[in-house]
Length: 172
Image 1 (cartoon, helix red, strand yellow):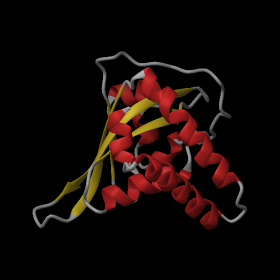
Image 2 (spheres, helix red, strand yellow):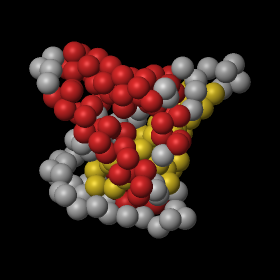
Image 3 (tube, helix red, strand yellow):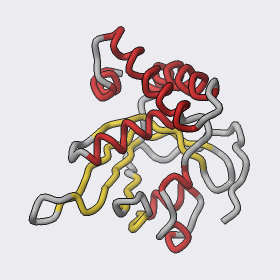
């Protein structure tokens, strides 16, 4: 599936709508609701089986996704502000609530994400952090080093505030 280069044009979805998706343990999409398909610009059949990262906007630091995956992989929920890219290259912001799904033995079997319209003031507050983390990641040629440096950058910025990522996000 050929992806469009990013375009600096934001798209919006109605305040009351919720973008819903489910993935398997590897992050491949197993369900996408109508709102998700409409805002992202894909048909459901095109999304099923694709990695959720198909929507990852290049302005999003890899470190934020590492924190997200580490959190849900440990069985906890997480809230995050995420900038996604549409099929046409436009972008949209979401306030995501991502949770693991468990079987009867309490093993994680999948992940579920509900995304709502984010508050504009929260986006204004999160963008400088994401830009700083992205810049730190870009300073490193090795992908592993870049990711580690990005995570350190996030953690150090939050340590100064005495907050976890989730506390920071929920206070925005």
